[in-house]
Image (tube, rainbow, N blue to C red; front, top):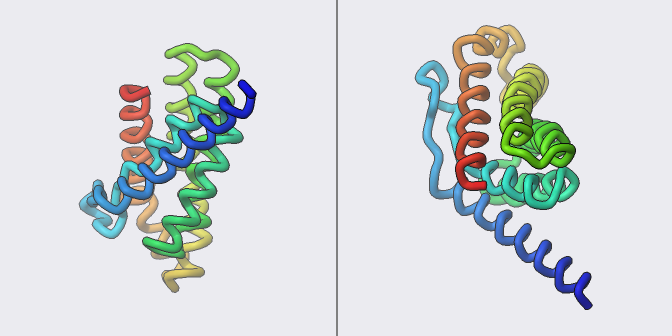
Length: 168
């Protein structure tokens, strides 16, 4: 009976975190980098990162999948794959580092490593998916890497990581 209660509590918490992520993306979104006002920050990953630290990387990855699909249906279908790959990379890296050593230092290391990994993944994703879905030539995307895509993703992931560290 105790195991059922723990599983119910975990599932309920994950569902609430998913709902919070959806509400946050709907209510809070604004440009971070003037060179690319179409790239908007949203704090939807914060509940995902908290769920990852609470329940581990597998739960964080499942939470990422649920949130990506809901966001894709309600906000934009184009970003489902990119968001899953980027946030999923962050979750797996940060979650595994934190799970190995449940300390503040491990959390910081995981969040920093996740930020860098997420930025790298988003560079690749933008080079692949932006030409496919938006029709932009690869050369145009390459021109945006340094002035817009890299700074945006570093700020986006670092800001979400910092808030996660404060809240968690």
